[in-house]
Image (tube, rainbow, N blue to C red):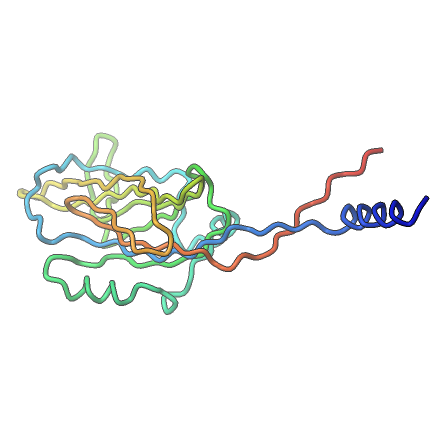
Amino acid sequence: MNRLCWLLRAATLAVLLAPATALAERYRVDLILFADRAVASTEGSQPVQLPETVRSFEPWEVTPLRNAGIEILEDELFGLMNEWNRLRNSRNHEPLIRIAWIQKDPPAERGIALRLKHGKPMTSLTPGGSVEVYPVDGWIALLAGRYLHLDVNFVQTQAAEGGELRSFRLRERRRMKRDELNHLDSPRLGVLVRAQRADPKPVAVPKPAKKP
């Protein structure tokens, strides 16, 4: 065997034996959910709605979120404080929820979602009995196929005249511009969100089993 062939064979063997690594896609997301105070009528409302909460977990449910590659950040690390304060000082808007998280390899279609609730629960009577209804309840999911998308499903419920509970829904799936502030809205609820590429971390990829 000549020297060139020996070097090529040695290089190929080194590649096959070296531990393979890949870079995980990691995104940092900062999000604000806010209410529009300017809309006072019940136009467009529906009878009490409950959010679809299948495969959604609240921020304190650390284990299932971690298994899905989601890490909730501490509130002091929240990155949209200027926007939060502007909404808080606004006459027509009320900031409700703020949250930031890191997510590894978001799915192209909805997998695990983050469930967010706001306010003191109310009791609603249904044919099946009484149920707890939060003033704002729903979920958000980051998706990363060819483009980044945010999937949002929230229900806002409030008492109308006579004490009857009525609900409004924000349901939207929106393509996002990375590193920019994105805005999703409805007549009652709105979302400000920014998604940025986080530093990638090497992830070990198992080597294929050797053929017998």
